[in-house]
Length: 195
Image (cartoon, rainbow, N blue to C red):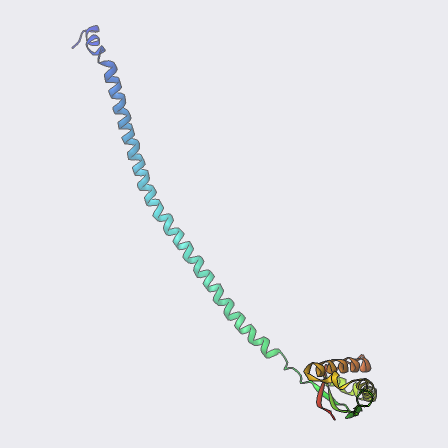
Protein backbone atom coordinates (compact mmCIF):
# COMPACT_ATOMS: atom_id res chain seq x y z
CA UNK A 1 0.00 0.00 0.00
CA UNK A 2 1.94 2.66 -1.29
CA UNK A 3 1.00 5.97 -2.40
CA UNK A 4 2.48 6.42 -5.83
CA UNK A 5 5.83 7.98 -5.44
CA UNK A 6 6.38 6.78 -1.90
CA UNK A 7 6.53 3.12 -2.86
CA UNK A 8 8.68 4.00 -5.69
CA UNK A 9 10.87 5.93 -3.34
CA UNK A 10 10.96 2.99 -0.93
CA UNK A 11 11.63 0.48 -3.65
CA UNK A 12 13.58 2.87 -5.81
CA UNK A 13 16.79 2.33 -4.05
CA UNK A 14 16.24 -1.43 -4.17
CA UNK A 15 14.91 -1.57 -7.68
CA UNK A 16 18.21 -1.87 -9.46
CA UNK A 17 19.20 -4.61 -7.03
CA UNK A 18 15.93 -6.46 -7.49
CA UNK A 19 16.13 -6.19 -11.25
CA UNK A 20 19.70 -7.39 -11.15
CA UNK A 21 18.76 -10.28 -8.84
CA UNK A 22 15.75 -11.19 -10.96
CA UNK A 23 17.90 -11.02 -14.03
CA UNK A 24 20.51 -13.27 -12.46
CA UNK A 25 17.86 -15.70 -11.25
CA UNK A 26 16.25 -15.58 -14.65
CA UNK A 27 19.51 -16.45 -16.32
CA UNK A 28 20.20 -19.09 -13.76
CA UNK A 29 16.69 -20.39 -14.20
CA UNK A 30 17.05 -20.09 -17.94
CA UNK A 31 20.48 -21.66 -17.64
CA UNK A 32 18.94 -24.41 -15.60
CA UNK A 33 16.32 -24.79 -18.25
CA UNK A 34 19.02 -24.81 -20.90
CA UNK A 35 20.91 -27.36 -18.82
CA UNK A 36 17.76 -29.41 -18.49
CA UNK A 37 17.22 -29.19 -22.25
CA UNK A 38 20.82 -30.15 -22.84
CA UNK A 39 20.47 -32.99 -20.37
CA UNK A 40 17.34 -34.12 -22.14
CA UNK A 41 19.18 -33.71 -25.46
CA UNK A 42 22.06 -35.67 -24.03
CA UNK A 43 19.64 -38.37 -22.90
CA UNK A 44 18.18 -38.27 -26.40
CA UNK A 45 21.69 -38.34 -27.86
CA UNK A 46 22.59 -41.20 -25.53
CA UNK A 47 19.43 -42.91 -26.60
CA UNK A 48 20.24 -42.15 -30.23
CA UNK A 49 23.92 -43.16 -29.95
CA UNK A 50 23.13 -46.73 -28.84
CA UNK A 51 20.78 -46.97 -31.82
CA UNK A 52 23.53 -45.67 -34.11
CA UNK A 53 26.09 -47.96 -32.43
CA UNK A 54 23.85 -50.98 -32.90
CA UNK A 55 23.24 -50.01 -36.52
CA UNK A 56 26.98 -49.71 -37.16
CA UNK A 57 27.56 -53.08 -35.48
CA UNK A 58 24.88 -54.74 -37.61
CA UNK A 59 26.33 -53.22 -40.82
CA UNK A 60 29.86 -54.33 -39.88
CA UNK A 61 28.67 -57.86 -39.08
CA UNK A 62 26.76 -58.08 -42.38
CA UNK A 63 29.84 -56.86 -44.29
CA UNK A 64 32.04 -59.41 -42.53
CA UNK A 65 29.64 -62.24 -43.34
CA UNK A 66 29.46 -61.09 -46.99
CA UNK A 67 33.27 -61.02 -47.30
CA UNK A 68 33.56 -64.41 -45.62
CA UNK A 69 30.95 -65.88 -47.98
CA UNK A 70 32.65 -64.40 -51.04
CA UNK A 71 36.01 -65.82 -49.94
CA UNK A 72 34.55 -69.28 -49.36
CA UNK A 73 32.79 -69.21 -52.73
CA UNK A 74 36.00 -68.14 -54.48
CA UNK A 75 37.94 -70.92 -52.75
CA UNK A 76 35.51 -73.62 -53.84
CA UNK A 77 35.24 -72.28 -57.39
CA UNK A 78 39.02 -72.03 -57.82
CA UNK A 79 39.61 -75.45 -56.29
CA UNK A 80 37.19 -77.09 -58.69
CA UNK A 81 38.52 -75.02 -61.60
CA UNK A 82 42.11 -76.07 -60.91
CA UNK A 83 41.13 -79.76 -61.00
CA UNK A 84 39.61 -79.27 -64.44
CA UNK A 85 42.78 -77.66 -65.74
CA UNK A 86 44.92 -80.53 -64.53
CA UNK A 87 42.55 -83.07 -66.03
CA UNK A 88 42.57 -81.29 -69.41
CA UNK A 89 46.36 -80.90 -69.71
CA UNK A 90 47.85 -83.63 -71.90
CA UNK A 91 50.82 -85.48 -70.44
CA UNK A 92 54.17 -84.31 -71.77
CA UNK A 93 55.53 -86.35 -74.65
CA UNK A 94 58.80 -88.15 -73.99
CA UNK A 95 61.68 -87.06 -76.21
CA UNK A 96 62.86 -89.18 -79.12
CA UNK A 97 66.44 -90.27 -79.69
CA UNK A 98 68.46 -90.85 -82.85
CA UNK A 99 71.72 -92.77 -82.68
CA UNK A 100 74.68 -91.47 -84.64
CA UNK A 101 77.15 -94.12 -85.92
CA UNK A 102 80.18 -94.65 -83.64
CA UNK A 103 83.19 -92.50 -84.47
CA UNK A 104 86.89 -92.97 -83.82
CA UNK A 105 89.34 -90.15 -84.62
CA UNK A 106 92.96 -89.38 -83.83
CA UNK A 107 93.60 -86.28 -81.70
CA UNK A 108 96.12 -83.56 -82.57
CA UNK A 109 99.34 -83.89 -80.64
CA UNK A 110 102.77 -82.34 -80.56
CA UNK A 111 105.38 -83.78 -82.97
CA UNK A 112 107.09 -86.81 -81.51
CA UNK A 113 104.28 -87.57 -79.03
CA UNK A 114 102.36 -90.78 -79.05
CA UNK A 115 99.20 -90.58 -81.16
CA UNK A 116 96.00 -90.66 -79.10
CA UNK A 117 92.60 -91.72 -80.35
CA UNK A 118 89.11 -90.60 -79.34
CA UNK A 119 86.18 -93.01 -79.58
CA UNK A 120 82.73 -91.44 -79.24
CA UNK A 121 79.20 -92.86 -79.19
CA UNK A 122 76.62 -90.10 -79.50
CA UNK A 123 72.80 -89.93 -79.36
CA UNK A 124 70.74 -86.95 -80.52
CA UNK A 125 67.80 -85.89 -78.31
CA UNK A 126 64.79 -84.59 -80.28
CA UNK A 127 61.64 -83.14 -78.72
CA UNK A 128 59.17 -84.20 -81.39
CA UNK A 129 59.00 -87.73 -82.82
CA UNK A 130 57.88 -86.33 -86.20
CA UNK A 131 61.30 -84.70 -86.64
CA UNK A 132 63.12 -88.05 -86.34
CA UNK A 133 62.23 -89.06 -89.89
CA UNK A 134 63.34 -85.65 -91.21
CA UNK A 135 66.71 -85.87 -89.41
CA UNK A 136 67.68 -89.46 -90.32
CA UNK A 137 68.51 -88.66 -93.99
CA UNK A 138 70.94 -85.97 -92.73
CA UNK A 139 72.96 -88.33 -90.49
CA UNK A 140 75.88 -88.72 -92.96
CA UNK A 141 76.28 -84.93 -92.98
CA UNK A 142 76.12 -84.88 -89.16
CA UNK A 143 78.79 -87.61 -88.93
CA UNK A 144 81.05 -85.71 -91.33
CA UNK A 145 80.75 -82.46 -89.34
CA UNK A 146 81.44 -84.32 -86.07
CA UNK A 147 84.55 -86.06 -87.39
CA UNK A 148 85.93 -82.88 -88.91
CA UNK A 149 85.54 -81.05 -85.61
CA UNK A 150 86.80 -83.93 -83.42
CA UNK A 151 90.02 -84.32 -85.47
CA UNK A 152 91.03 -80.77 -84.52
CA UNK A 153 90.84 -81.43 -80.77
CA UNK A 154 93.82 -81.93 -78.47
CA UNK A 155 93.66 -84.25 -75.46
CA UNK A 156 93.74 -81.17 -73.19
CA UNK A 157 90.57 -79.82 -74.87
CA UNK A 158 88.42 -82.64 -73.50
CA UNK A 159 89.93 -82.90 -70.00
CA UNK A 160 87.44 -82.65 -67.17
CA UNK A 161 83.74 -81.96 -67.12
CA UNK A 162 84.17 -78.39 -68.43
CA UNK A 163 85.92 -79.74 -71.55
CA UNK A 164 83.16 -82.31 -72.13
CA UNK A 165 80.49 -79.65 -71.66
CA UNK A 166 82.16 -77.41 -74.28
CA UNK A 167 82.43 -80.40 -76.62
CA UNK A 168 78.72 -81.16 -76.17
CA UNK A 169 77.77 -77.52 -76.88
CA UNK A 170 79.91 -77.40 -80.04
CA UNK A 171 78.45 -80.66 -81.35
CA UNK A 172 74.88 -79.48 -80.65
CA UNK A 173 75.53 -76.25 -82.55
CA UNK A 174 76.96 -78.15 -85.53
CA UNK A 175 74.07 -80.63 -85.61
CA UNK A 176 71.48 -77.85 -85.62
CA UNK A 177 73.29 -76.19 -88.55
CA UNK A 178 73.29 -79.49 -90.46
CA UNK A 179 69.61 -80.43 -89.89
CA UNK A 180 68.05 -76.95 -90.10
CA UNK A 181 65.12 -76.14 -90.07
CA UNK A 182 64.71 -79.16 -87.75
CA UNK A 183 65.98 -78.73 -84.20
CA UNK A 184 67.97 -81.05 -81.91
CA UNK A 185 67.58 -80.45 -78.16
CA UNK A 186 70.90 -81.92 -77.07
CA UNK A 187 73.78 -84.18 -77.97
CA UNK A 188 74.18 -86.96 -75.41
CA UNK A 189 77.32 -89.02 -74.94
CA UNK A 190 76.81 -92.75 -74.57
CA UNK A 191 80.56 -93.37 -74.50
CA UNK A 192 83.68 -91.24 -74.80
CA UNK A 193 87.13 -92.84 -74.53
CA UNK A 194 90.60 -91.43 -75.10
CA UNK A 195 93.20 -94.15 -75.91
